[in-house]
Amino acid sequence: MKTLAVMSRKGGAGKTTVAVNLTLAARAMGVKAVLADADPMRSACEVLKGREEAASVLFETSASKLFPLTQACARAGVELLIIDTPAAPEADVAEAVKVADLCLAVARPTYLDLAAAVLSVAVIQRLGREGLIVLNQCAPARNGVEPPGVLKAFEALRFASLAVAPVALRSRVVYQTAFAQARSVLEIDAGGAAAREVRDLFGHVWRLLNGEGRAPLRTANDDLRRGGAGLKLMPTA
Ligand SMILES: Nc1ncnc2c1ncn2[C@@H]1O[C@H](COP(=O)(O)OP(=O)(O)O)[C@@H](O)[C@H]1O
Ligand SMILES: [Mg+2]
Image 1 (cartoon, protein in one colour):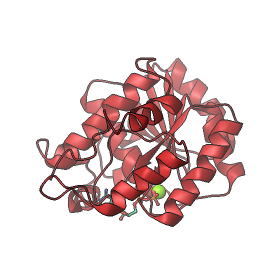
Image 2: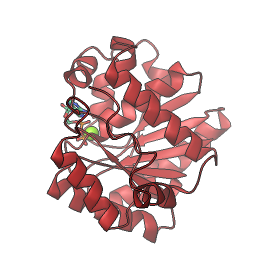
Image 3: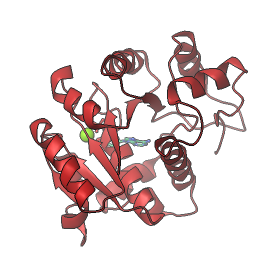
Image 4: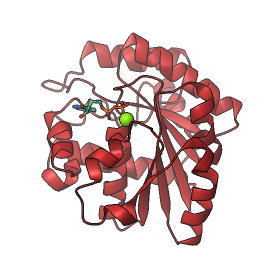
C-alpha cells in the first residue's frame, strides 16, 4: 500500500480539493484508494457523505489514530491511502507525514501560501520523507500565455530549490460545483480541463509512489534548471 499525505498550514489552499479529487481519480482508474479525513473540520466527510460508497471510501480519523489506520488499510488490501490534514501546527500534521510515502504541500501561487509551503517542506525533510509542492488555484493561461503570478511562483520555488509538481491545478468553478454535488471534477465533466489536470496530477503522483521517475525532490528542480522542460505550465485554457 502507498500512503499520500496532503498538507498546508494555510486554510483554503486546497488540501481537501486535492485529496478528494485524487482519491476519486485513483478509484476511477481502478486503484483501490481510500481517504482518511484527519481534519477535525471534517470537510472531506462533508463533501463525500452523500455518496453511496462513502462508508468504504472515507474514514474519519485523527493524528493519534493514523498509524493503526494505515495498518488496517494495508491488511484490507487498500492500494492507496490519501490523508487530508488540518491547517494545523506541526505536531498534528507530523503524524501524517511520518506514515506517508509521499507528501503534497498544497499552495496557491501567493506569497503567504508559498511561505507556508516552505515550512511544510522543512517538516517533510526533517522527518526524512519525500515531498513536493502542488500549486493550486492558479489563474488559467490565456492564449498560451502563463499569468505572471504563476510564473513568479514557479520562479520563487526554483530560487528556493524546492520541488514542485509539473502539473498545476487552475482556479476553476467546476472544483466548487463538483463538491456541492459530492463528486469529483472527473465525474462532472470527464473531458474538461479540470479533469485533465487532476488525471495528470494523479498520474505523476502515482508514478512517483511506485518508484517510477526520479525522486521528487530532484525532479522538478532539474526540470526547472533546464528552463522548465517537462513542466506543464500552460496545459489548458
Ligand atoms: N482549483 C480550485 N478552483 C476553484 N476553487 C477551488 C480550487 N481549489 C479549492 N477551491 C475552493 O477553495 C475553497 C477551499 O478549498 P479546500 O480544498 O477546502 O482548502 P483546504 O482544505 O486547504 O482548507 C473551497 O471552497 C474550494 O471549493
Ligand atoms: Mg480542508
